[in-house]
Image 1 (cartoon, rainbow, N blue to C red):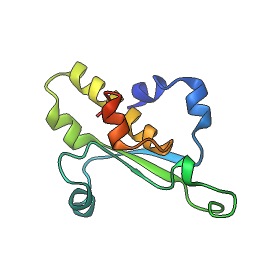
Image 2: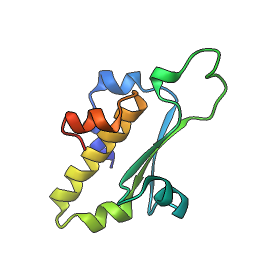
Image 3: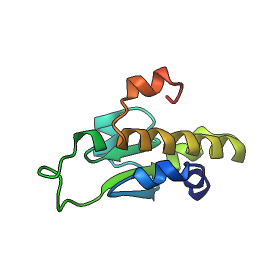
Image 4: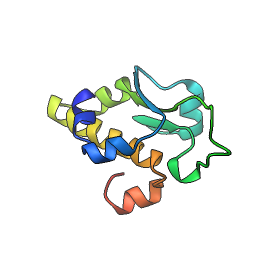
Length: 110
């Protein structure tokens, strides 16, 4: 996953605010129930477009979670896994910037 984070352009990474990126083995039952399907990653928090100095102060960091188990099960090779991790990291970071799933799909990052 560190390699995927290294692929994020520096100027974009500098714009990320108050967000932690973590790796978990599997999503919880609650996360699977809420989001359905094979969950590779999840953004939880308040995206940058929804923040204001009044409504967003003193809060815990947003959280991007990458799920190792589903990613590993879905990929046949190390190369496939590395590519899927990159796509997942980019997808979740896009949510941090306020980009919707529909827009990501239009852009080819689904």
